[in-house]
Amino acid sequence: MIIKNAMSVIPQKVEGVEGTEVRWVIDGNDGAPTFAMRIFDIQPGGYTPLHTHDWEHEVYVLEGECEATSAEGSKRAKAGDAVFVPGGELHQFRNTGGTLLRVMCLVPIVQSGGAACGK
Amino acid sequence: MIIKNAMSVIPQKVEGVEGTEVRWVIDGNDGAPTFAMRIFDIQPGGYTPLHTHDWEHEVYVLEGECEATSAEGSKRAKAGDAVFVPGGELHQFRNTGGTLLRVMCLVPIVQSGGAACGK
Image 1 (cartoon, rainbow over the protein chains, first blue to last red):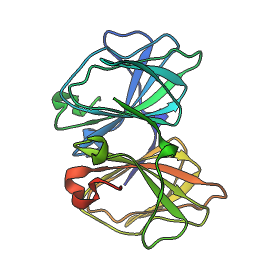
Image 2 (image 1 turned 90 degrees about the vertical axis):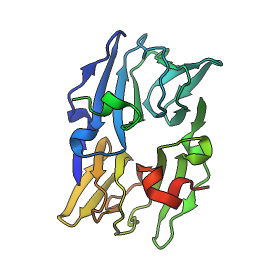
Image 3 (image 1 turned 120 degrees about the vertical axis):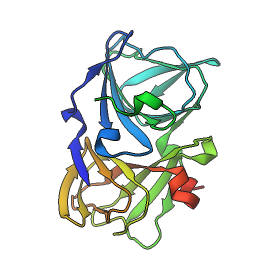
Image 4 (image 1 turned 180 degrees about the horizontal axis):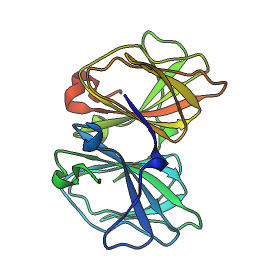
Protein backbone atom coordinates (compact mmCIF):
# COMPACT_ATOMS: atom_id res chain seq x y z
CA MET A 1 0.00 0.00 0.00
CA ILE A 2 1.36 3.38 -1.05
CA ILE A 3 0.05 6.54 0.63
CA LYS A 4 1.15 9.96 -0.60
CA ASN A 5 -0.19 13.49 -0.51
CA ALA A 6 -1.19 14.32 -4.07
CA MET A 7 0.40 17.76 -3.82
CA SER A 8 3.76 16.16 -2.95
CA VAL A 9 3.99 14.96 -6.56
CA ILE A 10 6.07 17.35 -8.70
CA PRO A 11 3.87 19.07 -11.30
CA GLN A 12 4.76 19.13 -14.98
CA LYS A 13 3.88 21.67 -17.64
CA VAL A 14 1.39 20.50 -20.24
CA GLU A 15 2.76 20.87 -23.76
CA GLY A 16 1.11 23.39 -26.03
CA VAL A 17 -1.28 24.97 -23.55
CA GLU A 18 -1.06 27.88 -21.14
CA GLY A 19 -1.64 27.99 -17.40
CA THR A 20 -1.92 24.25 -16.91
CA GLU A 21 0.13 21.78 -14.88
CA VAL A 22 -0.36 18.06 -14.32
CA ARG A 23 0.63 15.75 -11.48
CA TRP A 24 0.75 12.02 -12.21
CA VAL A 25 -0.42 10.97 -8.74
CA ILE A 26 -0.71 7.20 -9.30
CA ASP A 27 0.73 5.57 -12.41
CA GLY A 28 2.90 2.75 -13.67
CA ASN A 29 5.77 3.91 -11.46
CA ASP A 30 3.64 2.95 -8.44
CA GLY A 31 2.81 -0.43 -10.00
CA ALA A 32 -0.62 0.60 -11.30
CA PRO A 33 -1.44 -1.91 -14.06
CA THR A 34 -4.72 -0.66 -15.54
CA PHE A 35 -5.32 3.08 -15.15
CA ALA A 36 -3.53 6.23 -14.00
CA MET A 37 -4.67 9.05 -11.69
CA ARG A 38 -3.60 12.57 -12.69
CA ILE A 39 -4.53 15.93 -11.19
CA PHE A 40 -4.56 19.02 -13.41
CA ASP A 41 -4.23 22.55 -12.01
CA ILE A 42 -5.62 25.04 -14.50
CA GLN A 43 -5.27 28.75 -13.76
CA PRO A 44 -8.05 31.23 -14.61
CA GLY A 45 -8.07 31.54 -18.40
CA GLY A 46 -6.08 28.30 -18.77
CA TYR A 47 -7.26 25.20 -20.59
CA THR A 48 -6.43 21.69 -21.69
CA PRO A 49 -5.95 20.91 -25.41
CA LEU A 50 -9.01 20.65 -27.64
CA HIS A 51 -8.32 17.17 -28.93
CA THR A 52 -9.46 13.62 -29.36
CA HIS A 53 -7.90 10.17 -28.81
CA ASP A 54 -8.97 6.57 -28.67
CA TRP A 55 -9.12 6.23 -24.87
CA GLU A 56 -11.65 7.54 -22.38
CA HIS A 57 -11.33 10.07 -19.54
CA GLU A 58 -12.97 9.85 -16.14
CA VAL A 59 -12.87 13.29 -14.57
CA TYR A 60 -13.84 14.65 -11.15
CA VAL A 61 -13.79 18.39 -10.43
CA LEU A 62 -12.04 18.92 -7.09
CA GLU A 63 -12.04 22.73 -6.98
CA GLY A 64 -13.37 25.58 -9.08
CA GLU A 65 -15.51 25.51 -12.18
CA CYS A 66 -15.00 25.03 -15.90
CA GLU A 67 -16.48 24.91 -19.33
CA ALA A 68 -16.35 21.36 -20.69
CA THR A 69 -16.48 21.32 -24.47
CA SER A 70 -17.32 18.46 -26.82
CA ALA A 71 -18.51 18.32 -30.43
CA GLU A 72 -22.02 18.92 -29.06
CA GLY A 73 -21.04 22.26 -27.52
CA SER A 74 -20.02 23.48 -24.07
CA LYS A 75 -21.45 22.75 -20.64
CA ARG A 76 -20.48 23.94 -17.19
CA ALA A 77 -18.97 21.64 -14.57
CA LYS A 78 -18.11 22.56 -10.99
CA ALA A 79 -16.59 21.09 -7.85
CA GLY A 80 -18.28 17.78 -7.06
CA ASP A 81 -19.20 17.05 -10.68
CA ALA A 82 -17.98 13.97 -12.55
CA VAL A 83 -17.41 13.94 -16.31
CA PHE A 84 -17.13 10.89 -18.55
CA VAL A 85 -15.49 11.48 -21.95
CA PRO A 86 -15.80 8.37 -24.15
CA GLY A 87 -12.85 7.36 -26.33
CA GLY A 88 -12.92 9.13 -29.69
CA GLU A 89 -14.84 12.18 -28.48
CA LEU A 90 -13.46 15.70 -28.98
CA HIS A 91 -13.01 17.44 -25.62
CA GLN A 92 -11.50 20.41 -23.81
CA PHE A 93 -11.65 21.82 -20.27
CA ARG A 94 -11.33 25.56 -19.83
CA ASN A 95 -11.17 27.50 -16.58
CA THR A 96 -13.76 30.22 -17.05
CA GLY A 97 -13.89 31.05 -13.32
CA GLY A 98 -11.81 33.43 -11.26
CA THR A 99 -10.11 30.82 -9.07
CA LEU A 100 -7.95 27.74 -9.55
CA LEU A 101 -9.57 24.85 -11.41
CA ARG A 102 -8.32 21.52 -10.03
CA VAL A 103 -9.55 18.38 -11.77
CA MET A 104 -8.71 14.73 -11.34
CA CYS A 105 -8.50 13.03 -14.73
CA LEU A 106 -7.98 9.27 -14.98
CA VAL A 107 -6.89 7.41 -18.10
CA PRO A 108 -6.43 3.74 -18.95
CA ILE A 109 -2.80 2.71 -19.14
CA VAL A 110 -3.12 0.08 -21.85
CA GLN A 111 -5.06 2.23 -24.30
CA SER A 112 -3.03 5.39 -23.71
CA GLY A 113 0.19 3.64 -24.72
CA GLY A 114 3.12 5.87 -23.87
CA ALA A 115 1.03 7.93 -21.48
CA ALA A 116 1.29 5.25 -18.80
CA CYS A 117 3.72 7.23 -16.69
CA GLY A 118 4.14 10.93 -16.37
CA LYS A 119 7.45 10.74 -14.57
CA MET B 1 -19.70 13.57 -22.76
CA ILE B 2 -21.67 12.88 -19.59
CA ILE B 3 -21.64 15.43 -16.75
CA LYS B 4 -23.32 14.63 -13.43
CA ASN B 5 -23.03 15.76 -9.86
CA ALA B 6 -21.56 12.83 -7.95
CA MET B 7 -24.03 13.32 -5.11
CA SER B 8 -26.95 12.94 -7.54
CA VAL B 9 -26.09 9.23 -7.80
CA ILE B 10 -28.23 7.13 -5.44
CA PRO B 11 -26.07 5.60 -2.70
CA GLN B 12 -26.14 1.89 -1.88
CA LYS B 13 -25.46 0.13 1.37
CA VAL B 14 -22.24 -1.88 1.45
CA GLU B 15 -22.86 -5.52 2.41
CA GLY B 16 -21.49 -6.73 5.69
CA VAL B 17 -20.21 -3.42 7.07
CA GLU B 18 -21.71 -0.65 9.15
CA GLY B 19 -21.98 3.06 8.47
CA THR B 20 -20.82 2.88 4.86
CA GLU B 21 -22.53 3.75 1.58
CA VAL B 22 -21.20 3.69 -1.97
CA ARG B 23 -22.11 5.65 -5.08
CA TRP B 24 -21.07 4.19 -8.45
CA VAL B 25 -20.42 7.58 -10.08
CA ILE B 26 -19.01 6.39 -13.45
CA ASP B 27 -19.28 2.75 -14.50
CA GLY B 28 -20.32 0.41 -17.30
CA ASN B 29 -23.78 1.97 -17.35
CA ASP B 30 -22.16 5.20 -18.57
CA GLY B 31 -20.16 3.29 -21.19
CA ALA B 32 -16.92 3.17 -19.17
CA PRO B 33 -14.90 0.29 -20.67
CA THR B 34 -11.84 0.04 -18.42
CA PHE B 35 -12.37 1.28 -14.87
CA ALA B 36 -15.12 2.52 -12.57
CA MET B 37 -15.29 5.54 -10.25
CA ARG B 38 -17.02 5.02 -6.92
CA ILE B 39 -17.36 7.35 -3.91
CA PHE B 40 -17.70 5.85 -0.42
CA ASP B 41 -19.25 7.78 2.47
CA ILE B 42 -18.07 6.28 5.76
CA GLN B 43 -19.55 7.61 8.99
CA PRO B 44 -17.42 8.05 12.14
CA GLY B 45 -16.69 4.53 13.40
CA GLY B 46 -17.60 3.02 10.03
CA TYR B 47 -15.30 0.99 7.82
CA THR B 48 -14.91 -0.94 4.60
CA PRO B 49 -14.37 -4.72 4.72
CA LEU B 50 -10.95 -6.08 5.68
CA HIS B 51 -10.43 -8.15 2.57
CA THR B 52 -8.30 -8.94 -0.44
CA HIS B 53 -8.98 -9.51 -4.14
CA ASP B 54 -7.02 -9.81 -7.37
CA TRP B 55 -7.58 -6.25 -8.61
CA GLU B 56 -6.08 -2.97 -7.49
CA HIS B 57 -7.64 0.12 -5.90
CA GLU B 58 -6.74 3.73 -6.63
CA VAL B 59 -8.10 5.86 -3.78
CA TYR B 60 -8.26 9.61 -3.17
CA VAL B 61 -9.47 11.00 0.16
CA LEU B 62 -11.96 13.79 -0.57
CA GLU B 63 -13.00 14.64 3.01
CA GLY B 64 -12.08 13.57 6.53
CA GLU B 65 -9.39 11.20 7.69
CA CYS B 66 -8.95 7.47 8.09
CA GLU B 67 -6.80 4.60 9.15
CA ALA B 68 -5.69 2.59 6.12
CA THR B 69 -4.77 -0.96 7.07
CA SER B 70 -2.73 -3.50 5.14
CA ALA B 71 -0.81 -6.63 6.17
CA GLU B 72 2.05 -4.29 7.14
CA GLY B 73 -0.10 -2.44 9.69
CA SER B 74 -2.10 0.78 9.76
CA LYS B 75 -1.28 4.27 8.51
CA ARG B 76 -3.24 7.50 8.56
CA ALA B 77 -4.59 9.11 5.40
CA LYS B 78 -6.40 12.44 5.17
CA ALA B 79 -8.09 14.71 2.65
CA GLY B 80 -5.79 15.25 -0.33
CA ASP B 81 -3.97 11.94 0.11
CA ALA B 82 -3.90 9.25 -2.58
CA VAL B 83 -3.63 5.54 -1.77
CA PHE B 84 -2.60 2.76 -4.14
CA VAL B 85 -3.59 -0.76 -3.06
CA PRO B 86 -2.02 -3.39 -5.37
CA GLY B 87 -4.06 -6.41 -6.38
CA GLY B 88 -3.76 -9.22 -3.84
CA GLU B 89 -3.03 -6.97 -0.86
CA LEU B 90 -5.17 -7.12 2.28
CA HIS B 91 -6.76 -3.73 2.97
CA GLN B 92 -9.34 -1.85 5.00
CA PHE B 93 -10.31 1.81 5.46
CA ARG B 94 -11.72 2.88 8.82
CA ASN B 95 -13.09 6.29 9.77
CA THR B 96 -11.28 7.06 13.01
CA GLY B 97 -12.15 10.77 12.88
CA GLY B 98 -15.17 12.64 14.16
CA THR B 99 -16.53 13.73 10.76
CA LEU B 100 -17.66 12.12 7.54
CA LEU B 101 -14.97 10.24 5.62
CA ARG B 102 -15.54 10.54 1.86
CA VAL B 103 -13.16 8.61 -0.38
CA MET B 104 -13.07 8.08 -4.11
CA CYS B 105 -12.10 4.49 -4.92
CA LEU B 106 -11.54 3.39 -8.50
CA VAL B 107 -11.42 -0.22 -9.69
CA PRO B 108 -10.70 -1.87 -13.03
CA ILE B 109 -13.80 -3.22 -14.73
CA VAL B 110 -12.20 -6.19 -16.48
CA GLN B 111 -10.44 -7.55 -13.41
CA SER B 112 -13.35 -6.96 -11.04
CA GLY B 113 -15.65 -9.11 -13.15
CA GLY B 114 -19.17 -8.71 -11.86
CA ALA B 115 -18.30 -5.52 -10.03
CA ALA B 116 -18.38 -3.53 -13.29
CA CYS B 117 -21.66 -1.82 -12.48
CA GLY B 118 -23.17 -0.87 -9.17
CA LYS B 119 -26.63 -0.16 -10.51
